[in-house]
Length: 274
Image (tube, rainbow, N blue to C red; front, top):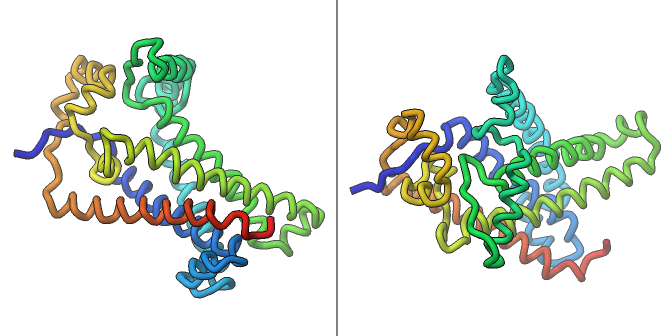
């Protein structure tokens, strides 16, 4: 019998995440292959995209597509806000906007890690999920703006002095490395490599989470749904085996490729000119 699950993400949200995974991995690979072109590892990585110059073209095209997708996502999120009751919509328990409660839960969670406090009880979103979301959101703004300046340097030079492009280049590179480190270390570990989720959390791929696990991890959300009479309507069956197989193949391939990029970048860092 299939395990009962609770729906957490809509098909559109899952599509956004799928496109973000693909575009981020491509951007990380094409950016790193050019950054590490002095190494054999970087040259091998570049050959996946047709070489050094071709990798830049792929980087530009996918970067523009990411910016377009980001604009659509921002518009989608704005449309979801109930502007007549904007305070409750933006700062209520279903909102992804962080608040003071998230900061309190962070320190309570830290105390639990150290054996000093009881574990916090979470609602629909944990503080780390909100941090993940907004880190990507503002990272897209920073990387997108600097990337456009660098993609069209002649047009950009009409708006700023030449040294401005050098600043944009380093901001772009540093923010990209921070994003790669965060996604391939922190996000991968929290989402997939924790013992409870290992080897992969299917929630974002399948759109639903194991109901028993959610009862344990997000008791406030379950209690709220139960009190509102919405819990039963969100319960869904587990995906059929062939669907789960597809999710695992895609997800584990993405994780493996991300870890390959991370380890290759760290190992070869002393071999490049910064």
